[in-house]
Image (cartoon, rainbow, N blue to C red; front, top):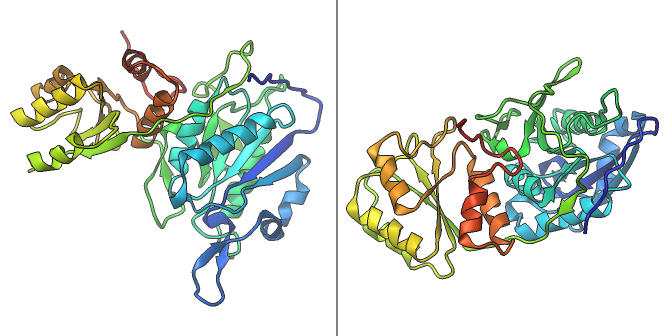
Length: 355
């Protein structure tokens, strides 16, 4: 089903908050001291500033709320469905989410919400909203402002899936969690921030993706499985890779390589990867480095992976690469079609080299 986008510059902006769970909406269990989720009605008591916004703000709550460590593709499908079903009614969406898998969810939604023309801002907190020093209040309030922001023509300032955290607005499928304790929990190493929030929110319009206004939203509701991540390390043994070879229903292997996409020159590793390719398994080469891109033709140690059938993952994140594969495997494409899509930037998730 397709969903048309309509904007009215004169009407009051309407925002739907989708509360999935996570640290931002947790409180301490009085008996155990462990953090547990509470519902959004109670959540609003800790953020009375919500009533001061000149916007229409409604909420949708996952019941029960989800710890982000329990995040699965079925919940990405549910979020996609909620956004699609309410697409004509609201001007923007704010998703409250746990931080552990936030970057995976942001990446997944960037693919399932094809032709997105409205903001989907995902945020959360490192400290629960019930704590005095919580970062959740500022993250939430600024996310709502960004979701409601319009340009002079009444069009959304950021019509894409983003993560807002600690004063930075980042493209969702370029983001990774880098800090388990600090408030600056997320970073986009290979793409600049889309906006910075200080006294004013400063948007970098040159970096923001703009949809084709002629195309309606096209949501997707299917993800594939059968993906494994192989991280290379010095001294890797044949038996380690044999476990991968024996996996049933293996459809794609993400290889986390050294530097610009290099692997040890072990003949047995080359042969095993080549065998997987011949079995129809998709091989994707991404770097273990936080910053930079894969260039398999730079060194002999990278060229051998290209010869084994591996496709370039460029400067994509692990989260973006895995969810893109899951998305493509769910679309009933042939292997050749998937390889073509992997070499295409579907939602700004990779930087392709200039010809």
